[in-house]
Length: 190
Ligand SMILES: [Zn+2]
Image (cartoon, rainbow, N blue to C red; front, side, top):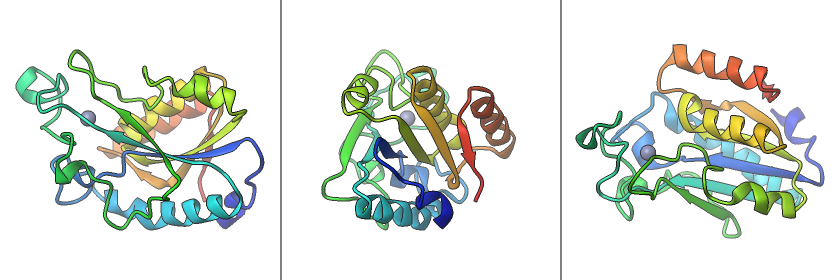
């Protein structure tokens, strides 16, 4: 990991996806080992700060009734409802004061798994001359996957920090990594 962090350069960005309490053990949509990404990401966040690399954190931020919830015919139990405790970032995640927060999942008519989905983020980052984006967070097979694929499509060099993500289920997690590879994303195994 240290080796990969040391490669930070101008035009890089660190993007942390949805490290929120509801996605960690004890949360409404808990991912096994979800909290294990926190110390890894804290190291990346600290190093990015030291190297002057911008740090962006996305959050799932649903209205009380949301199409992704089972009650509305969606796939998931209610989670990350706006301003609830479960929607907070994990308590141990060292959220930088100067981090940029990307809010998604606010629409009443559809879900937004990707941090790039209708957020304007890709245009903004191109304007900021960002070329390469290191990504970690939750969940590997859902929002991280969607974000990496959208980022590649938008012309960024996406690099998954494999030690800084966990899947909802292991089979889909392996498949997600293959999809990312096929799309041209880098997979940092260390
Ligand atoms: Zn959600």
